[in-house]
Image (cartoon, rainbow, N blue to C red):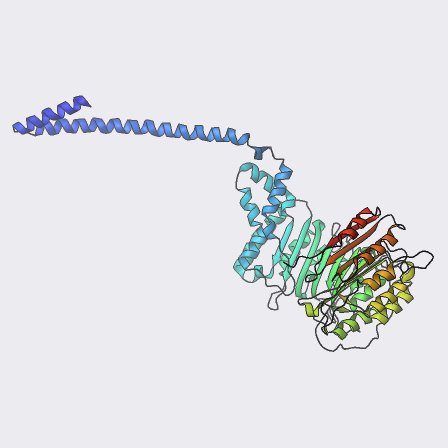
Length: 526
């Protein structure tokens, strides 16, 4: 650089003496040499940069090979991936709004799972090589509202089915809106081709036409769960008649909806769950299935109603069923007389000679309509007719309005009872309150020497309570019960607004009872 600088000074001096051309030529030559050298150095630097990139990548590969995530077993990694796909899982009922077409397509394609599979080759291998990750098939009516979306569905659905290999499938098809189009026959036929893989199948549509699934008839060896909600076309249930592993069925039963539950393999079910409106109590379709259920079955009946008078007269024929568990829930809005009449007519129609558990509850959107009024006379007749004194072991009455004298009379007919659950109710429709777990009930349930006791086999009491009893009376009750059973369970849950602590002396003495397992759970107002 110094030599070049000296030469440039000489050139400048020569230019100063008069002729600049030799200086220009010399400088141009120097510039060309510099440009050539710079080009060579750039090539060398580029080569160095490429070598550096390759060395860095190789080093990172070696580092990643010893990273803890590389040592995670593939089955554990697959389980982690399943959580990334959890947003694709959604459930509908008839009142929910469908997702957008784009969201529905993402659900179907398992978009989050596919994104995870693009992180690395090993993750791709695990994601694409684990069939159970692709077992859920969620189809929404939005997917065939336009030909553009439907064309994408016809590409995506076969891919998802293929990625599932031979693993079991969880099928969910929802078309709940009044304006929803019918199931495309091509989709139903494609699903039917894979019916031997179905483990769970849920179909929800206002008009339920599943004739496109006819190819699935007799090809349902894995089906365990079936949900059908809608108005049925003839022959819908014939498809599911031969399903040897079917255990749980839930249906919506409405008058004139074409439903014939006897087409299902009722004799093998463990759970039959039915939603049925009770505006007309002469047509409770679901009850007609009870005689065919096995003794071990659980029957859940959700009666749906609205305010107003009930139509029909109590002319339901007597139904005798061997089932062991009956759960009666009232849903949506009810007046006191409505709920009492609805449940009473159900009891009037039944004889249950093997029933071991009866649950009654409500599920409503507001506290005012969340109360079930006890059909006392009808229950007493049912208990005597069915011989509950020899086999009913569990009685759960949640949010049930029942007078204490009525409860005691019921218990007089339930000498085989082992577990009782009751609810205090702070505010009834008339503004009063209901206290069931009080001193008088505890005294009545307290066993005394040489005196016949109420429900002598009782080994468990659970209550949602306003805590309006004397703790010493509760202690005497517990003491009287623990000696006759291996374990007595006492669970008291406080109701918000009625919070207090258990008396400390009583608490110590309860702790000393060897055969007692108790829970005192006052609700915090905050």
